[in-house]
Every structure is written in C-alpha cells, then in structure tokens.
Image 1 (spheres, helix red, strand yellow):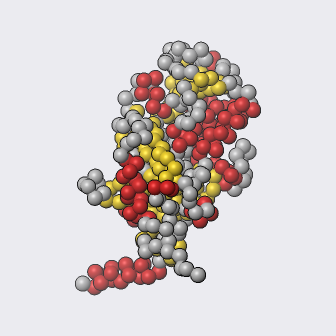
Image 2: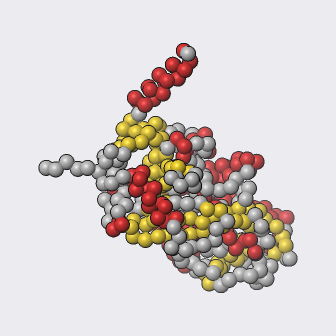
Image 3: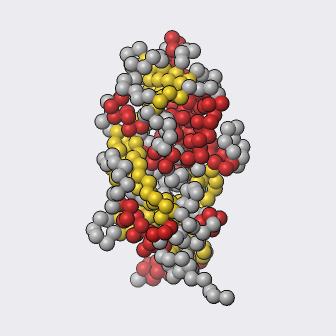
Length: 378
C-alpha cells in the first residue's frame, strides 16, 4: 500500500541521514580484565522512602531505597529531606537546636551530613563502614532509572531528578561552592532503540524539561567490522569514588564526627533528631519489607587505549543465547580505565566474586564490541 511504502521510505531516509560516529572499543581480552566488582544496591518496591515522622520521642527523617539511581537523584532527595525536617521543626519546635545523627555513609548519608552542616546544624554521622561502599563502586551514569517506580510516583521522582540535574550541572560548569568540575563531566551516551525504549535510558524527564537535547539517530562504527544504529544522548558522568572522598574531606574539615558503629535501633540513639539513610539496613531498622536488595556485577578493565579515546557511555540490550532473555551491556569510562557491565538482579544479596555473571558480561561484551580496530600497516 501507499502507507506501507511511505513508511519504508521514511525508514530508509532515517538510515541514510544518520551521522556516523567512530568509536574506539574497549579491549576485552583476558589480559585487559583487572578484576570483578560486586555490589548490592538498596532497592525498594514502588518508590524510594522519603518521609518524616515523630516516633518514640525522636524526629526521624527517612531517605533510602534509591536502587541504582542514588547518585542521579542525590541532591534532589537530600534537599527534599532537609526541607521536610525544617517543616517538621515548625510543628515540633522542641527539636529546634538539637543535635542530628545521620545514620548511613553512602552517598545519601554523607551528602545529607554535608548539607546539614552547611546550613549550620550540629551533625554527627555513624555507619558500619565508610570505605568501599556501594556508592564508591557505582558506575556514575546520570539517569533517572534503575528503580522500581510505580506510575503514581513518577512525577515526584522526575521533579527531584531534575533538581539534582541542575546541581550536577553546576559542578560540571565549575560553578559549585564545594565541588570542582573534575568531579563530573558532560559525556555522550549511545543506546540502542531497545535499550532506550520507554524512558530514553532514564533521560526522558530531562528531555521533556528541555534541559538536555533529544536523542539523535547515529551509526556507530568501531572500526573492526562492528557497526550499529543507535541513539546519541547528552548526559553526565559522575566520578562517584572521588565524590565520596570529597564528602568525607568536607566533613573532616568541618569537624563533623564520623563514628564507625552499627545501629540496631533508631529510637535507641542518643540524639533526638535522626536522618535514616541506611539503604538496605532500613529493612530491619524501619521494619520496611518493601526494601529489596538488587545485585550488580561490573568488570574493571586495564591496559586500555587512552581514556580520551574512550570518552563515551554505551548501553545495549542483547538477547542471550541460552534463553535468559534480554541482558544489558554497558561501557562506562569509570576511572582509571573503564568498566563493562552489568546486572540488576532483584532479591539477591551477595557479593560473590566467583559469580558466573561476570563471565556472562565478558562474553556478551566481547560479542558486541568485537576486537581492537583494524589499523592499516604503514
């Protein structure tokens, strides 16, 4: 029919006008594998928990359950939690001027402590560990995704994500009071149509708000025979481990105590005001059965081309050969020499480095990226 012919012509025209992008693939031979990274993200069914209450004589503000998007919506959620706290002070002035304990030392907890201190509050932070947390291991792709968000909560998530975007933008542009531009950067992200389907790889809210451009169809060429039609987005790469170091540095400079201890009960803490940023720990501390672990696997790389040649993020879904369905592939130039991933396995709370998922990641990544580009001999 005329309509079907016109559709075929349109598809042909789109293919013909795609801009070609030449990319250098990561090297994925055995000697290029530095090690395996396993982590457990603090997920929560329906939406993260951002709320305040007075319980057992304590003013408690909850901020946890952000899944794989903790860094993306970090500032929006932290600012909102402090706004909630200050609103509660109006209704409960007896908590005014009381010392605040922040429980949890992931990015949410440390950022909360930094922002409270900036506003003049007396703060102490406590956590089981401060080093090598899931927040340190995160890939750093800014995307309002990797959460189980029910439709009725999406608008709130998008609003806080947009607030965070503006804060990250200040950092990248060198206009932030605390963080230099070295802590984040603008970066192109390439995604297949299947990977981008629905929410544009977590970029939909930002595109709708017109703070980033919409996707551009491109053809990426790895120079080794591997070519793909993909969509190009503009996003931010957050240097998570460096940000965690900077958070801790700010707290030390501000003389904020950081206590290494395990909290067994929020009401049992000495302080009258508590910010609960415990992630997975909230399952027990807040009796929250909606909290769920989400296991993740990454492969750290070494002996790579110069990172200036690997300055891109790539996201793809591949159909497994053994009936496992769609499995994600992504490359992120997380320092010092990049990572490939990854997995999002719900209800798995294990950091086993012998997990066969690492080999699955390498197998599908090698299949997608191919070998090093063929270089002409001089």
